[in-house]
Length: 65
Image (cartoon, rainbow, N blue to C red; front, side, top):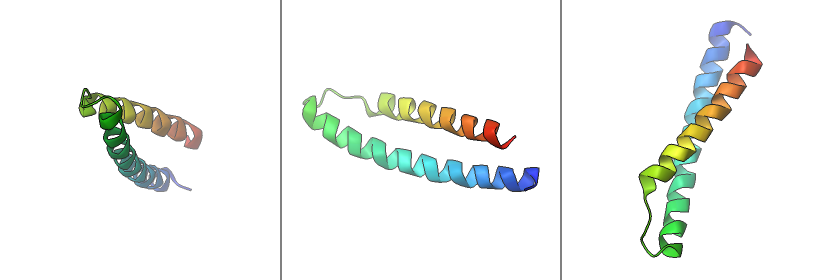
């Protein structure tokens, strides 16, 4: 696999991962809203999920290098 092919695959995986993270955050925010009676900040949860997702992507990229 060439470097360009690896980057394309990595980009596609990143896109899929971010879509899944967004869906997971949406579900979690819905559940958390009921659990905390509205005292909830969705942007904080999204930020945390994206940070974790980017850490996973970085690890995957290090494995393909």
